Length: 456
Image (cartoon, rainbow, N blue to C red; front, top):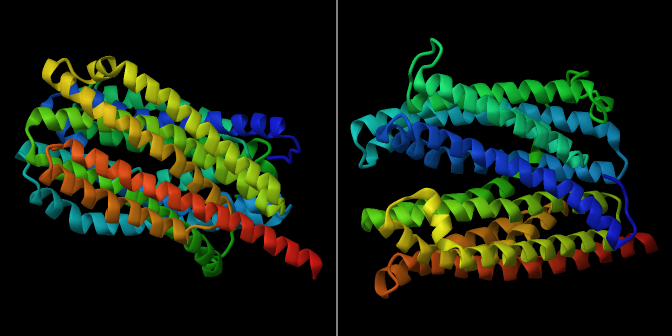
């Protein structure tokens, strides 16, 4: 990151930071897609087991790894304040905390996964594959969470292109080990869907090794000597990370878990409806990578300016990001409106499923427009380290407004399954408006605090 003075320069720097983040997020999305797609070639039980396992794992990972995203605004503000000496200490404490989080996940998973799977109405082969897929993934949790901290460190420096390259390298590694372990090629055991779990775990170890080497050997990361000093555990720094990170993680969990809840509620409908819903949901999740990436870029840019006490620059980046997200949402909305059949045909060849999916994709237009406003504002607020109110607003928009209104529309109107989408879009819209009000309040408060400090 570096200071800019003109809006044109800010736009160029923002795009330089944003594009690698977007490619990285799409790459991470593609890894999960590869697991499901390649498992499908092994058999219907395999794809079902991996899909169930993924649906349980993704909300847990995104929520708990969200805690570690606190590293980004903390380091971004340290850089903006030119306090570089504190950065390696922050990174190492983040690594310690990530390992503790993994231990908690492993202990909790060992106690709850089997009972949870037994509660589901699954065929025995599917239940078994889901369990062993998750067990295989567990071997890669430590490297995944440690990598998340190192990625936050690199991104906070504005070097998002590096983590993009690492993610792109991970895709062929993941595809190779999927091929070897799912199908039992070149003397490897044929593990079916479970092999996808081991392949992903191996991939996580590989990308951690690559990232550690880069952090140790390559500029500008090597100048911080992250691994040079063995720091003692600092509960004070953990408290700072958790104070910012827990609300971020919970806000992300509220958002990702809502889709799991809707999927469970959709089980009352026929197979065609469920399949069509899943198509629209998966494509909407793919499109969400755009506002999510803009959100992450804003955390870096706004955090840097806030650390440097540059009020107007932080505000300009905020509106630049929100405007970019809305513009992209309009473009993707037009694509959804013009090509719903083409999109649905990517996922299915069943004419009934495609026909119904077209209707779900229409409602996805409004869903992603609301996301385009809310997600970037959350990112900007994280740059200010303002996360607690965002957590409350996420809870209200999804679980107090979105899901209940969706349930009422689905159960007591002729909208049926489409009611859930309308309800969630309504919740997102209300949440986006409340977040915007919060952003304006924080911007004005930050300006007043700086003016007061200048007069004293």
